[in-house]
Image (cartoon, rainbow, N blue to C red):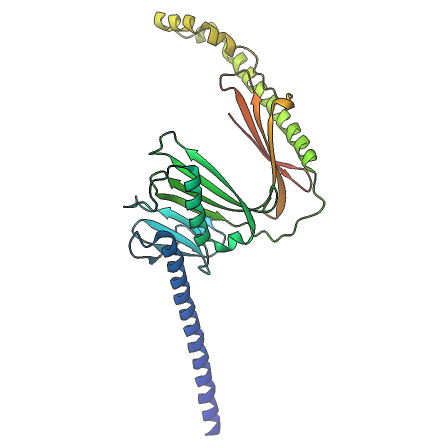
Length: 317
C-alpha cells in the first residue's frame, strides 16, 4: 500500500512540474505577444488596424536567429525572439494613411526616423551613433528620405550594427531594417594604421584601373578589326548622323585614362567597421577623373584591419 502511494505521489509531482512548465511557457508567449504589440503600437499609433501574430516562415532565411512575426492591415513586423526590438518593418500593401505629415526637410525626416528607431530598438542607443541621410528623387512630392543610423564606439569606428529607415516625402514609412553584428567591444590592438590602409587601397585600385583601361582598349581594338564581310550596311541618314557627331566619336577613340595617380585631386573618406568577427578599414576614393563623358569614378575598398587583405573593391561612376 505504501509503495503504491509513493508511485501516486511521484506521478502527481511530475504532472505538477509538467503543468507548471507549460504554464510558464504559455505565460512567456503571452508576455512576448503583449510586448511586441506594445512596441509596434508606439510606432504606428494603431493607425493600420488590429495587430495580430503572423507566420514568419517566408522571412526566416533573412535572419540568423528565431524571430516573431506580427502584422496589421498595411505592414508586417519582424521582431527578435524576446520581442524587445524590431528587426524589420515592411509594407504588405500601400498604407491607407501616412504615418507623418508631409515632410519638407531632411531635418524633419531625421527627427521622424530617430523617433521610430528609439521605439524599435532602444538598446541600440546604449552606444553613440552617427546619422546619415540622403534624399532620393528630385520632386518633393515623390521623393524618399533614406536614413541610416550607425552605432559607433569612437570617432569613425563603427560596430557594424545599423538601422536603415526609408520614409517618403508624403509621410509614409516605406521600410525599416536593423542589422546587429553582435559586436562585443573586443578589438585587437595590432591593427594597421589609417595611412597603411590608404596605401593598400590605392595599390589595389591602381591594379583595377589598369584592368579597366586595358579592357576598354581591347574592346576598341576588337571592334576596329572588321573583316570585309563583317562590315555593316548603313543608311545615308545614319552616315549623316555620324558626320554631325564626329567630334564626339573622335574623343571615344582616345585611350581610356583614369587619373588614379593624381592623389591630390581625390577625396578620401575612411572609417573602421566591425563585420563577421573582424575589424575592417573602409577606404572610399572619390573624384577620380577620367577622359570620358561621365567625368569621374569613385572606388570603394574593404580591407582587413589585422592582416591588410583587400576583401572587396568596387567602382561607381
